[in-house]
Amino acid sequence: MASPNRSVPRPPSARAVTRWILTHPDALPESDRIHLKAALANCPELTALAQHVRSFGHMVTHLHGDLLPKWIEAAGATTELPSLRHFAQHLLRDLDAVTAGLTLPWNSGVVEGHVNRIKMLKRQMFGRAGFELLRKRVLLSA
Image 1 (cartoon, rainbow, N blue to C red):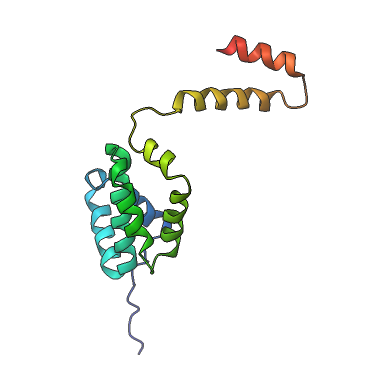
Image 2 (cartoon, rainbow, N blue to C red):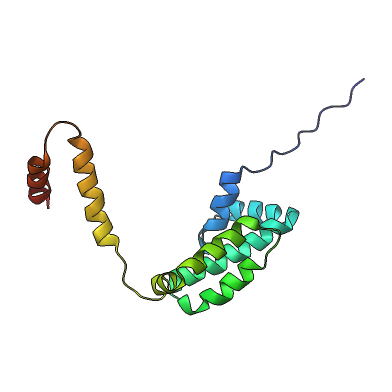
Protein backbone atom coordinates (compact mmCIF):
# COMPACT_ATOMS: atom_id res chain seq x y z
CA MET A 1 0.00 0.00 0.00
CA ALA A 2 1.45 3.36 -1.04
CA SER A 3 1.72 6.18 1.44
CA PRO A 4 -0.45 9.22 0.73
CA ASN A 5 1.24 12.07 -1.10
CA ARG A 6 1.99 14.96 1.12
CA SER A 7 1.49 18.19 -0.69
CA VAL A 8 4.55 20.38 -0.54
CA PRO A 9 3.70 24.06 -0.75
CA ARG A 10 4.86 25.69 -3.94
CA PRO A 11 7.62 28.23 -3.54
CA PRO A 12 6.56 31.81 -4.19
CA SER A 13 7.08 33.19 -7.67
CA ALA A 14 9.91 35.60 -8.37
CA ARG A 15 7.33 38.28 -9.12
CA ALA A 16 5.69 37.81 -5.71
CA VAL A 17 9.00 37.94 -3.84
CA THR A 18 10.00 41.04 -5.80
CA ARG A 19 6.73 42.73 -4.90
CA TRP A 20 7.19 41.82 -1.23
CA ILE A 21 10.71 43.26 -1.17
CA LEU A 22 9.80 46.45 -3.05
CA THR A 23 6.72 47.18 -0.95
CA HIS A 24 7.25 49.25 2.18
CA PRO A 25 7.16 46.89 5.18
CA ASP A 26 4.34 48.85 6.82
CA ALA A 27 2.21 48.49 3.68
CA LEU A 28 2.60 44.71 3.41
CA PRO A 29 -0.37 42.62 4.52
CA GLU A 30 0.40 40.25 7.38
CA SER A 31 0.21 37.15 5.16
CA ASP A 32 2.73 38.60 2.69
CA ARG A 33 4.98 39.64 5.57
CA ILE A 34 4.99 36.04 6.85
CA HIS A 35 5.75 34.67 3.37
CA LEU A 36 8.57 37.18 2.91
CA LYS A 37 10.06 36.28 6.28
CA ALA A 38 10.01 32.58 5.32
CA ALA A 39 11.62 33.30 1.94
CA LEU A 40 14.35 35.44 3.53
CA ALA A 41 15.04 32.75 6.13
CA ASN A 42 15.73 30.23 3.36
CA CYS A 43 18.03 32.41 1.24
CA PRO A 44 20.84 34.56 2.70
CA GLU A 45 21.46 36.24 -0.68
CA LEU A 46 17.83 37.32 -0.79
CA THR A 47 18.16 38.71 2.73
CA ALA A 48 21.18 40.79 1.70
CA LEU A 49 19.37 41.99 -1.42
CA ALA A 50 16.30 43.00 0.61
CA GLN A 51 18.48 45.04 2.98
CA HIS A 52 20.16 46.88 0.10
CA VAL A 53 16.84 47.52 -1.65
CA ARG A 54 15.24 48.85 1.53
CA SER A 55 18.16 51.17 2.27
CA PHE A 56 18.09 52.46 -1.33
CA GLY A 57 14.33 52.98 -1.08
CA HIS A 58 14.85 54.93 2.14
CA MET A 59 17.34 57.19 0.32
CA VAL A 60 14.87 57.78 -2.51
CA THR A 61 11.81 58.48 -0.37
CA HIS A 62 13.56 60.64 2.23
CA LEU A 63 15.93 62.45 -0.19
CA HIS A 64 19.16 61.32 1.49
CA GLY A 65 21.52 61.53 -1.48
CA ASP A 66 24.41 62.14 0.90
CA LEU A 67 24.21 58.43 1.87
CA LEU A 68 24.66 57.28 -1.74
CA PRO A 69 28.47 56.83 -1.73
CA LYS A 70 28.27 54.57 1.35
CA TRP A 71 25.43 52.60 -0.25
CA ILE A 72 27.38 52.18 -3.50
CA GLU A 73 30.41 50.99 -1.54
CA ALA A 74 28.34 48.47 0.42
CA ALA A 75 26.46 47.24 -2.67
CA GLY A 76 29.68 47.04 -4.69
CA ALA A 77 31.24 44.85 -2.02
CA THR A 78 28.61 42.12 -2.36
CA THR A 79 30.20 39.25 -4.24
CA GLU A 80 27.09 37.04 -4.03
CA LEU A 81 24.92 39.65 -5.82
CA PRO A 82 26.63 40.49 -9.12
CA SER A 83 23.60 42.31 -10.56
CA LEU A 84 23.44 44.63 -7.57
CA ARG A 85 27.19 45.21 -7.79
CA HIS A 86 26.87 46.16 -11.48
CA PHE A 87 23.96 48.49 -10.69
CA ALA A 88 26.06 50.23 -8.05
CA GLN A 89 29.00 50.55 -10.45
CA HIS A 90 26.74 52.10 -13.10
CA LEU A 91 25.52 54.67 -10.58
CA LEU A 92 29.13 55.81 -10.26
CA ARG A 93 29.17 56.80 -13.94
CA ASP A 94 27.02 59.83 -13.22
CA LEU A 95 27.30 60.16 -9.48
CA ASP A 96 26.64 63.91 -9.39
CA ALA A 97 23.34 63.61 -11.26
CA VAL A 98 22.17 60.62 -9.21
CA THR A 99 23.10 62.37 -5.96
CA ALA A 100 21.21 65.48 -7.07
CA GLY A 101 18.19 63.36 -7.96
CA LEU A 102 18.26 61.76 -4.52
CA THR A 103 18.79 65.07 -2.71
CA LEU A 104 16.83 67.83 -4.42
CA PRO A 105 13.04 68.05 -4.11
CA TRP A 106 12.56 68.93 -7.81
CA ASN A 107 11.94 66.43 -10.57
CA SER A 108 11.12 66.40 -14.25
CA GLY A 109 7.76 64.68 -13.87
CA VAL A 110 5.74 67.49 -15.45
CA VAL A 111 8.02 67.67 -18.47
CA GLU A 112 7.96 63.90 -18.90
CA GLY A 113 4.16 64.02 -18.77
CA HIS A 114 4.08 66.51 -21.65
CA VAL A 115 6.56 64.45 -23.66
CA ASN A 116 4.43 61.35 -23.08
CA ARG A 117 1.30 63.21 -24.24
CA ILE A 118 3.03 64.46 -27.40
CA LYS A 119 4.30 60.96 -28.23
CA MET A 120 0.79 59.59 -27.80
CA LEU A 121 -0.58 62.19 -30.23
CA LYS A 122 2.19 61.36 -32.70
CA ARG A 123 1.42 57.62 -32.48
CA GLN A 124 -2.27 58.28 -33.07
CA MET A 125 -1.43 60.16 -36.26
CA PHE A 126 1.23 57.74 -37.52
CA GLY A 127 1.44 57.84 -41.31
CA ARG A 128 -1.67 60.01 -41.73
CA ALA A 129 -0.58 63.60 -41.49
CA GLY A 130 2.42 65.87 -41.48
CA PHE A 131 4.14 68.03 -38.93
CA GLU A 132 1.72 70.97 -39.25
CA LEU A 133 -1.27 68.91 -38.12
CA LEU A 134 0.76 67.40 -35.26
CA ARG A 135 1.77 70.91 -34.21
CA LYS A 136 -1.85 72.08 -34.21
CA ARG A 137 -3.01 69.07 -32.20
CA VAL A 138 -0.24 69.55 -29.62
CA LEU A 139 -1.07 73.24 -29.23
CA LEU A 140 -4.82 72.64 -29.01
CA SER A 141 -4.56 69.75 -26.53
CA ALA A 142 -2.56 71.74 -23.99
